[in-house]
Length: 114
Image (cartoon, rainbow, N blue to C red; front, side):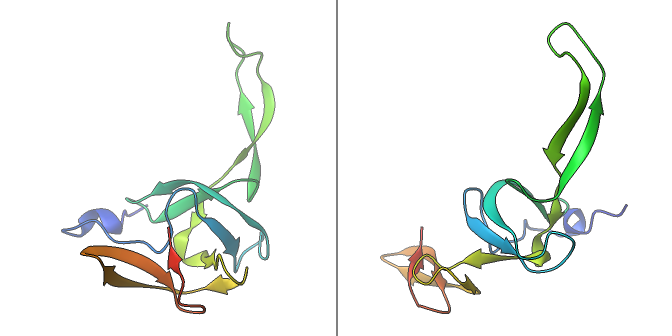
């Protein structure tokens, strides 16, 4: 698998960050919402709490009894949209400068996203 984002000179700016509430817009988990647990900048993927659950077989060890566990698998970042904190609907984001800092804001309501 080619790592598209790794060949670029600078790290890309994504529209979601760790801790954001997002909705999945396409794929088998379409319509589900959750909190972003991890963002993988090199592959452009995100892991979302309770979304895209897969079964992982783990070998038993001293600390782990082993067995079949369900974990969250990553999905591509283009398949998720940020939830607007004011309206609760999916929204695109923009960036603007406020008090000398670049902040994200909701295109739907205009509210600043923390």
